Image (cartoon, rainbow, N blue to C red; front, side, top):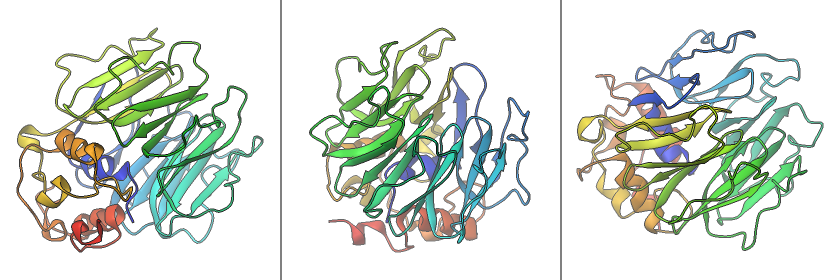
Length: 343
């Protein structure tokens, strides 16, 4: 099974260049499957784990970091006062990872979510039925899970209504959590935002269409358009909503508390050239073929050239090795062409 956000973020983060829009950058996976981290390191959260190899995805909490290995295990390090770096056994079968302020979440290949760490607000108590999830996100003290049927499940701290998903709770293709607000990307390319909105972070600027990815910070929000541009809104005290020019060529987006990040594609679209099966397939794994699928591809790649990813240099390091097939397996659960499992 494929988690929605992983389709772009996992394989592109290991094959492209991250550009910080403002403030201190967060950990990211480099082309060789290793993790590079920088910024505040009071708790060792930027000390890359050993061995630093074989990673396909990363996530960060307030003072801790998480890395997903190609073999499906999670490595966590940094501050651990609330057990946020103690991955519960069995540490295997994970396909996505997320960090809250002092809690952590992992999505299993079977569609269940494992959560651990600080739990005063119930943010690590995944509601039943804990199955059918395809993506996960963590806010300050709340958590979000996206179901395969396009609905969002939210739990934990709810003082500002950040776990009250607005109706209709359907048709979602991606999910993100800000500090005290939440965001969902609809299959039609629109964004729904709710929760704390004192800085306008839940007011999506018009036209609310054509989005393919979403992210939330402390008091601001970000949306990636299918044309590769980023729209940012909300609190701007540190320039976190001022996207540097040229605002084009982005393939993924992320937000810290007071900074923003955009992932630029390599010239010519990167190592993977817009595989044909993605152009007419269920790219985000929601069981539907719709504009978000095409938008993800358009934002990520530049031309159509079908490739067998399991025998391809997915991470663009000049070698074909287990890391490449591991990335594909973590994205799609198999090394067969994903179109075989799409409707």
